[in-house]
Image (cartoon, rainbow, N blue to C red; front, side):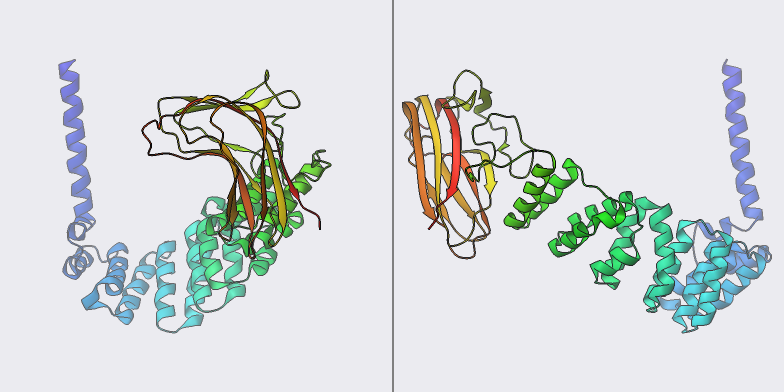
Length: 415
């Protein structure tokens, strides 16, 4: 066994030596260690028919600050191509040099040769598209970017980054560039979400059917949540209502703006204008099938008495209008709620400073109806309704006990 291992090690060593002897014979190691003009010229002397040293000298005259010389670079690139015309990379760099020298026709011819060598490759299409774009030749650039979007879809964010800067027109991109299929549309939509441009996102959403894209629940909720994050609350609510209707659901007949105000379902659509229920240390949130003011169940929050909980983890976005009167009602029951900072309902404005809260409950209470009468200020974009317990600096700050919430209603007051 030891003899076998020793033989393998000897073989590996001999192969390593043979490789470096071969590379030296080909003139490679003469410049790989030190990428300098002197070593590259020595490599050319050793192997004058080998194309790579010429190509690297062409790059040297492009990159070396003290030696930048476009004409010298062009000379060596042409010599490299003369020795090996089948390297796409050579032609692409030749196109760049011709462009820097203002020789558009020659640059375009070099790009054409590069594409002919490897028509399905990514690099040739990417360089060609960018060079044409830099020249303002958008019509010549688009086929190359379109090819990348179709055949190299994982590179689509990079392509869109370039095109959005060059063509600040979402409708043009949607009509002329984004491939006409649902997958490509979804990719472009997610790219726009990352940019956070609500105008572009809304224009894309309006054109989704022209790409054969049918928004499922998940995709619709992503759009709704994006609009909410952009403070387009009322627009988001319209999309939400349309999806709810499409799935056979309906808003409350009494015009209640709260979704699932009785907590009778785990969720209506999920996301969007459903209740947001988040985990929080010191409290456990669940649905109670044994206790309800009306219906079959309520929302229950149990505080463990060990933490000073700053509670705001049950909330819902609501489509409030500016300069409008509303009434918020909620039924709340408490058992053994400690501390003087109890539980309450509150409304917070979006897009304009606004805040209203109900009384807070501590100790033991049977079902009580909490009310908030309020008028919204101008410029309001929407609001948030939430269950609230504020953190306190009092000595008895650790909150314990249980609270139930049921039948939350938000109504616009008619004049």
